[in-house]
Length: 93
Image 1 (tube, rainbow, N blue to C red):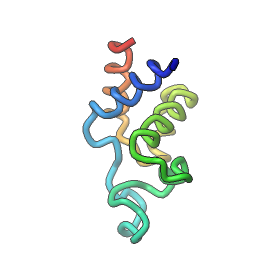
Image 2 (cartoon, helix red, strand yellow):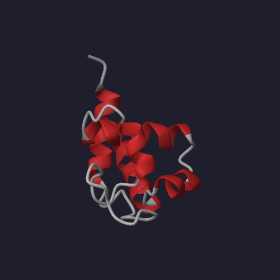
Image 3 (tube, one colour):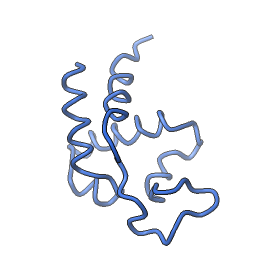
C-alpha cells in the first residue's frame, strides 16, 4: 500500500502529549469545534475525516515549514511536543 511513512508519522504524533496549546486565541470552543483545537488547525481538516488524518496533515505541514517554531506558534501547537514527535518519527524510520 505504500503508507508506512504516513503511519510512522501518525504514530509519532500520537506518542506526544498535548500537541495543542489549549484555547490560545479562542474565547472557548464553538459547538462545532472540538475543545482546545485552534481554528487555524481545523482548517486543515475541512472534510472532517478524523483525528489521525488531522495529525498527519499537521505533521506534513510542519515538515514542509521546515519544523518551524513560527509554524507551531501560528497554529497553536506545542513546539516541545512537536519536537518530541520528530524524535519518535526519526526512531521509527
